[in-house]
Image 1: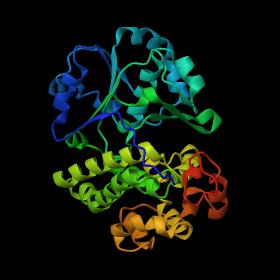
Image 2 (image 1 turned 180 degrees about the vertical axis):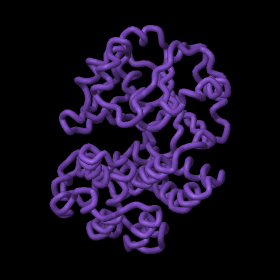
Image 3 (image 1 turned 120 degrees about the vertical axis):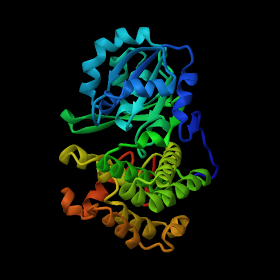
Length: 356
């Protein structure tokens, strides 16, 4: 654990109902390349009107999920041309859209160079564009982290673009944009946020600031996600949106840990939604974290009033999430955990003997 709390966070966050109205002023007179989720195609004109965003150079539609190296290669030639016409990149959509837009912005028009840097912690690319993010889901936290996930199905790999250019200049978090989010997406996104919060605590890189954000986020998700999913109550929606943001801020400092490490192969092999793949294992990892570092896990005792993992299992199962490892293709839990404890994310877990 770090002895000194270090917290570097350069994103200007605008969190409020109706905050989409600030986007035009934040972009200013810069020509913006707009990157949107496919589900926004029919409503983007009305949304831009609300945002006051008038100077767009072009609009690109992001992949529907899990942006891949092939998606980036497919747009390489077009982006080389379009990037010269754009002074900023604005992403409006879910985490996949934001990650895709980050890759475009960070590349500055040279996606080939960016692809060679995937997986490493690189200095900012010299031609990177300013990037602004407007999430329409509550969970991934991509709007407030310095990395993007890019998938490589052909090589059965999940790659990470970790680059200072991936920090957003501004994140506009408007809970009203969650309206219409399908149940499956809202559930997976919310549980992704819960995983981010818990993974930030059972983490070798945790510090008192990330702990405070993570605990607030976890409590908010557990208290409000079921209501948001079942009733679409505005107050619960706002609380989930705020909690997802706080969880993103927490793991922007710590990175994720064992639950995410276990999830990647499950998503690649079975196509399981990321938020489900990284949350079904949380009770088992909670149990292991208590055995490894009970004093550290005391931070989470206010959530359920106990360090038992059973209330977390009950919470997930009440939402319809199967927590049986066998049903995700994992027959030997100990072997799967042991294999991932030496991975980049697994090493962050407090039960890992060596951390990165």
